[in-house]
Image 1: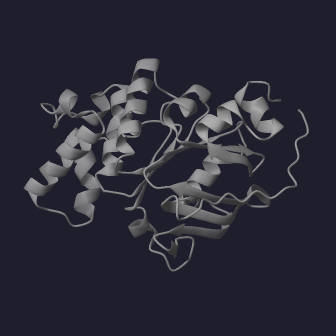
Image 2: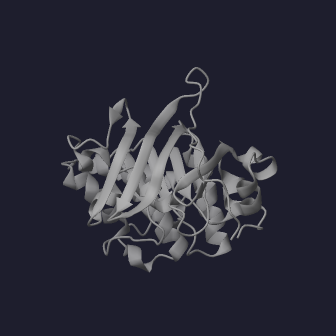
Image 3: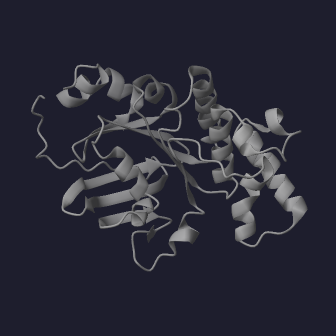
Length: 269
């Protein structure tokens, strides 16, 4: 393994006059017990853009992504410090209602995880849990969410069918629809296409590109071609730090540092 300089602290901030910031982290650290997995990451996510988080396995990108809506809270012996700013509020504060916050910052996981319920019930379950009972309103949200996830035309006549009967790609788009049914501002995705075939992957990518009109999206991916195809910005993680963060075309054509150049060109290691 080549030795790369990890001593320099990188803080990436946009000029607020030029861009609208949907989410920001300031000096975020994540510990699993005594292991420091994230080492002071400060990043900003521009509104209505797709940001890809790339880097080798174990570099911390998924850990960082999960910190953005406090999913690391679910893991024993985990500690997160630093600020995670959403809507002018530090959502890493102990005073935050985490479940309420997750209505605004949704998440889709690596493997499709639909509920063992009908397609319709997958979309409406959380809505009903939050007190929505009007069937017309629920019907409208189901249709809108499935259309946004590019799944409506395929399932509109089978909404009472088990979600588990869908293909892997359809299940993942259903999980995206389920997340956006809550009308979040931000959508986090942890390698959402890694278990899918190329055709299904292409459909998920097309869905995400269309969704950025209404959502701010952060996606962890090992697929360099995917990152270059769909993202506006890319952050390269290595050993718990962000080594470089810039517009995607610059990361893949004119990176500023050697470790980024080596990783995106396949010469890392």
